[in-house]
Image (cartoon, one colour):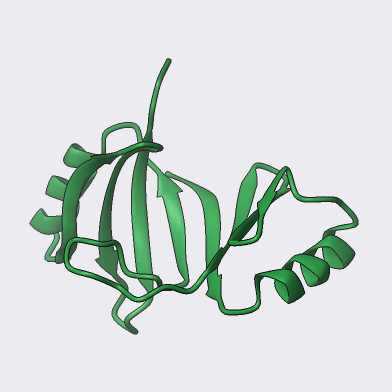
Amino acid sequence: MQLVEAAFFTPDVEGMTVFYRALLGAAPVAESPDMAIFMAGGTKIFIHRTYEAGEGALPPENHLAFSVPDVDAACASLQAAGVAVQTPAQDYYWGRSAYLRAPDGQLIELIQEKRD
């Protein structure tokens, strides 16, 4: 399991972009008015504009994402260890992801990235 992303949801994408550009000394690798993506080593820092969560939409919450080779197997193993999966594995444009919560409520994403 490898940390691949730290996602931050904010109403101030521009301010966060200026901050991370100064902190990292690098421009975003992708940018729009609603988001910016920076790379810090092998970890993506994803800044996204906050939005209203609708039915079926992913929660607009800060979270950490960990890459796993098989998200379904990882979920099964975690559930067997007593960890509840909040959002079961589903396919998205970036790959297959599931979401769970740490005991303090922190949202955690498990991602199986798409393979070409």
